[in-house]
Structures are given as structure tokens and as C-alpha cells.
Image 1: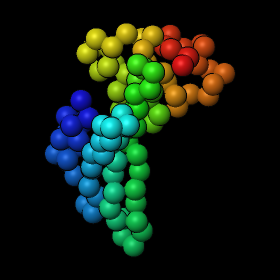
Image 2: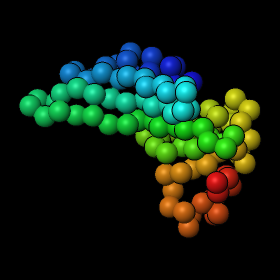
Image 3: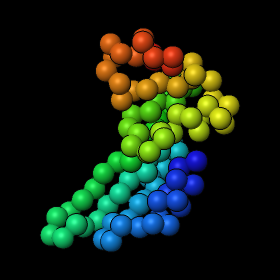
Length: 100
């Protein structure tokens, strides 16, 4: 899924920036990041960061236009296995997803 996102983002690259995938399969951390330069300023940012913990998908960061959650659901991941970790803890019980 993240590979497909990277391919899409790299089809319309921004000058001086690259989209990179970072996978740590041993610890189950997966990221899509942007790195590069804008003029004289170094730019870097996390587009998506997902980690697997206790058999759940913890979405730590998600700046995709439509988000990664709909794609996880479409791939068959149940809502109770997705934690929107970027939300404040007091908001998690109000979502239709897992709280932890």
C-alpha cells in the first residue's frame, strides 16, 4: 500500500524533494517520508507512519489526501484493529475505531 502511495507521489515530484519509503519489518514500523530542499532550507516530513503493535495498526501520522484508513478497511482490516493514534487519547473512544 505504501509502495503504491510512493509511486503516485513520485509521478508528480516537487523540485528538490524526494518521497522515500522506510520499512522496519523487524519492529513493524512503516513510513512514507519526504526529504529534500526548498531553496536554502532543508525540508523533511512524515506523510504516513504506521506501526503494528498487539495485532493492531497504529496510524501515528497520516497526511494523505484521503488517508490510509479507507484503504486498510478496503483491504479487509476490521475497524477494531485500527487505532487512530494521531488523535488525542480522550477522542479515541469517540471514534468508530480501536482505542488501543
